[in-house]
Amino acid sequence: MSAKRVNVAIIGAGLMGREVAAAIQRWPALIDHPVRPRLTAVCDINESALDWFDEIDTVTTKVTDYKDLLSDASIDVIYVAVRHDLHERIYSDVIAAGKSLLAEKPFGIDQSAVEAILAAVEKHPESFVRCSSEMPFFPGAQMAINYVLSGALGTIVEARNSFLHASDIDRTKPIGWKRQNEFCGEAGVLNDLGMHTWHVPLRLGWAPESVYGVFQNIVQKRPDAEGSLVECDTWDNVTLHSWAHHEGVRFPLTTETKRIDPGEKNTWVFEASGLDGSVRFSTKNPKSVEIFAAADIPGHGREQVWQQIDSGSQSVWPTVTGPNFEFGFSDSILQMWASYLAEREGLLGERFGCVTPEQAAATHSIFRAGMDSLSRGTATKPL
Ligand SMILES: NC(=O)c1ccc[n+]([C@@H]2O[C@H](COP(=O)([O-])OP(=O)(O)OC[C@H]3O[C@@H](n4cnc5c(N)ncnc54)[C@H](O)[C@@H]3O)[C@@H](O)[C@H]2O)c1
Image 1 (spheres, rainbow, N blue to C red):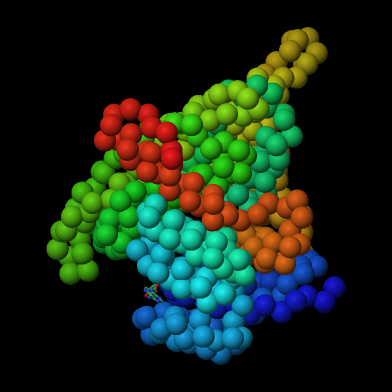
Image 2 (cartoon, rainbow, N blue to C red):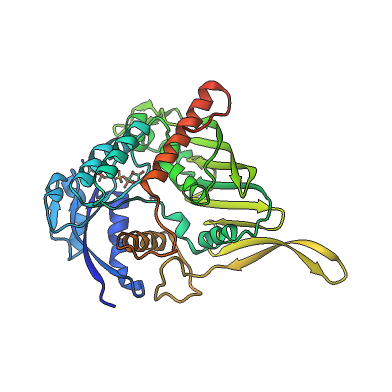
């Protein structure tokens, strides 16, 4: 198959900008993908952040003003990975320039920002827009999602989706932009990790009817760049208890977003239990998917059994990687991009897609309801 050439640019050459740039270099690992992306341009206001991109010989344009990329007719798709307070302006400009956008979460710092971005999306249908959320592309997560979609749960009992970190347990960790409301947003850790915990529930049709949030700001001061202690005003840990519906049955759906969960490093957990079957997957054991079912054991009768499956390497798009090999974070980024660029060409078919702008907007309504429940002291309906 001859793949369509698509030129990609990155705005924001930090942690995620470099991660995505590296993932695109592994594109030949994908089998028969209809698109061949080429990273040609990168922008960062910090000129020294651009140096790393010298490693990639397809990058011919390096700029410090993103508007220079918007006026470059050779660029088709832009990935933007910047501070949350910059999302509204930069995403809206990218969309208005007619470039396709793979945006980063939380897709705007708050509800008014997401509404402005949605208005730009509606006004410019020529711009194909999706939001990043890579964890569901782990093969084990795909297996768990397909298990739920198959109807194997029967009557649902409950479900949980969590994203857990622990590096903030270190009180000497400098504050950075992600720990300040001004740049991260009032929703705090929800803005940071919440998209990862709502992508799959929303995809499964589990939009919550009500939300009750448990919010913690555990470390309230952190050192700034000079070492002085300054206010750290973002929420560290938030658990949202909600009611959702699955096949007509109301059930408790819990999402956890934690920066301080001792021992956890980027652990994404999905669990759903039902009367006929249950499933659980965690990136802590990234190969393993557990399925619950009753089994007839000779001499014992009917027993309850958790069974374990090694999920292997294959996700949404086939790769040259041996099917029994392991899958990791950078593979999930590659798979997300495979999904994004295939969908942009109308060739994704039934495969799992990236977060839509409408789903991203729904997460902000859920976060808002969670914050409202905090001030009201009662469960609140997302608007
Ligand atoms: N999907 C994921 O797993 C994941 C992980 C981490 C962060 N993120 C998201 O990615 C985004 C960026 O996070 P990060 O960790 O890469 O941040 P970062 O601080 O490491 O990098 C941001 C970069 O943007 C640059 N920048 C700031 N203003 C700019 C401007 N006007 N034009 C161009 N560049 C500008 C900064 O100089 C910096 O290099 C955020 O939305 C964050 O929530 C996603």
